[in-house]
Image (spheres, one colour):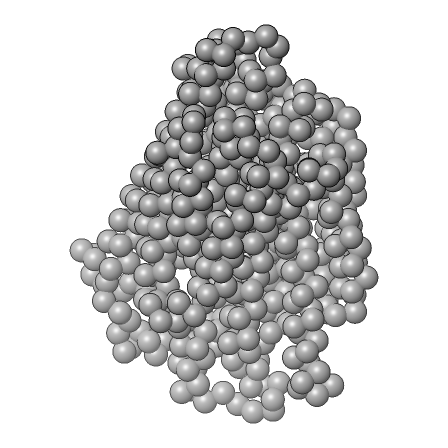
Length: 535
């Protein structure tokens, strides 16, 4: 097979991989606009409604690291095939669910499947594209697709909900899954890492259980009020997570390599992946409720109003690699936080009577920061580790994204729920349930809508402040002198390994000068901090 055929096969393989990636990202947000219809059809409680939204993200986030390691050991293509099939089955079951409990169960199944897809999909890019520049381009496209999936999920849902029942937003997954299952065996080769020991089952169980227990306590406390049982479950979750963290430092093959966080740029990047998803998921969900339940917009109108922000977000993710090459990764991370903070602040002037213009402006401005963060985090994760740990590192970045998505609704959404319970009419714990009560006086409805908007404002302001603080911290931490000449010549281990493998495949050797060249080509303007303690 000549070089052109190999490159064509690589790009076709990328297109096939992007199908499941798009679905997993879309399903993190596709139910935002569908929740009013689901509430009317299945009548979930306040607790069940939060779990319908969050169970998918929690399952993905809790298991991503485990499946990243499993894929590294047992084969990434095999895991992709299994996960895609399970994702399709879960989508069909969720679409035809007849009760909240059944819908939650199938959403959990879809989340488990999604956890198998994301880390292997990102890690397989390293085998499809051995050239560092081509791989960087492929990762940029991957990040843009992932960002686009989050952004267009509500838009696609809105178009379907105007014509079909709520389950249609889940059935759209099936054709994409079928195409992937047909083409993946043809275009993707099986790859697994060597020299890895068996999976630490105790770490998998404690991390997943701890996350679920801690988040259940937060969600239950927000929806039903703080109780002894919720506090107990929360403490158990925290204890499990603490034990998990200690165990990772004592075993030979941990699920999370915490030494990666010694790199300050990597640490800021992971937080940059977590917090924007948390802010985006919470404000996107609350804003969808605001447009429909407060301003009285139809599902179709709400979907169309999300288009400008989606376009900006996707475009930002696409152009970010080129921007990073000019201004550096550190400056890009700082820019992401400040633009998101400004965008979220634009939600504050919204009211019960108007706010469409402010909503569009907020999503467009914040979309710049979201797009930057989605793209940069994925590229840093793969560039930071040896090739044999690519799946685990990709999983760590995607875990931050998915946990941010789930925790955003759980934490920020719970904050809005608490404010509604305190300031809203004492009739139902959520705005959606209040509006479905018969015979309410106009004054009561106005109070309910005002309480909801106040909650939206507090969530937006809190998220904006957090982004402003993190942007300021990043500005201080990453504001150091550039790499010294000696540091610039020090090769990054996995980048050199990649360059050597490429040279060996061509039947040549790798000159020492090319080591630094390969490093610069892939990392661009590397502004990692090596300055003194005072920054």
